[in-house]
Length: 408
Image (cartoon, rainbow, N blue to C red; front, side):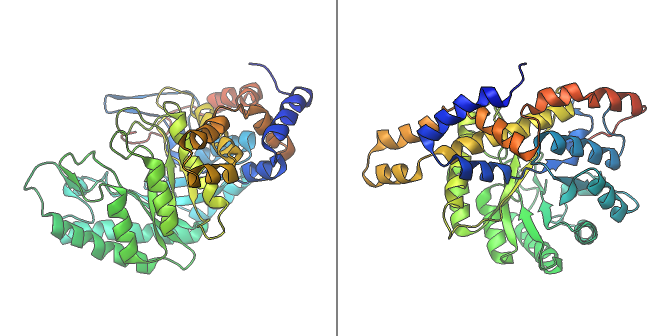
């Protein structure tokens, strides 16, 4: 890998300025584009066939914060960490929050777990047993209290609830249970906290899932109120779904809460951002960048990575994913919006597509390197991380069993 320096960047940046203009404004937007990393991606993970161990993985939530701090140090844009309860449960969440800040990060979205306990085999908030519904509800309410303690502004909800066989459950009754319980959760939210409601097409419920797609999530959020918004996971759709259309629709409705960023080839693969379909990622970011230019569009969208790094080194893969987000966002910012709108209004289909392709096919690595240097970050994050010796250091220090993401 070769190192980047100011002298090698100057000609490329000059060419970009001449071609697209607006580089100063674009650099500011890239520097302010925050990507949250997930605590669970720093521990050992695998498939249902086995967990693959790595040296130096965190043994507890505090060490996860250390690794998240390293990602932020080498990217400059990953200053918050999503946590999963009970995977990240500690005796003192105030102490955890303080420790995270010492590592240069803060705690972000709170993710309750209502799918792993044996009681939830037939559902959590949609279970026919009222005591199990209450158990799940109490856990989510406890997570809101944790969020208050660590000053989190996001409650991120995903439910594995569904059925595996026809006749196993009543669709309408389960829907009513879910709305009743989500209403209780919504009323418990502090005024500055948002509920992000995720969905999933299938798995582990093979016949039906109670929140199967973005439309169902949107319907519940409309019932609940302004603080409830849809969370789009890029892997939670049938193959060939036009995700950028969904994103644009939800933005226009003011109901796009945020993302779980990843990529897929077959199902919910949870692989590295833009590793299989970078053009789709660019088109999604194109809609987001366009909305940022619209004063009437919503601007409170949360970007969170959700991946299972089974065979890649955890921190390197996370840096790689953050950079992948920056690449597609930077390309989307290069799109000539005025020219695109003109082509669209004139019915010039070829020109409209070529405007997008011109931005997508542009090498933005010099632009991103310049942004990082201006932020005081190394222009080559992965190279800098490898040269830092951090992986070797934690491999020596962290002896014993590492944290495991159950089912990850």
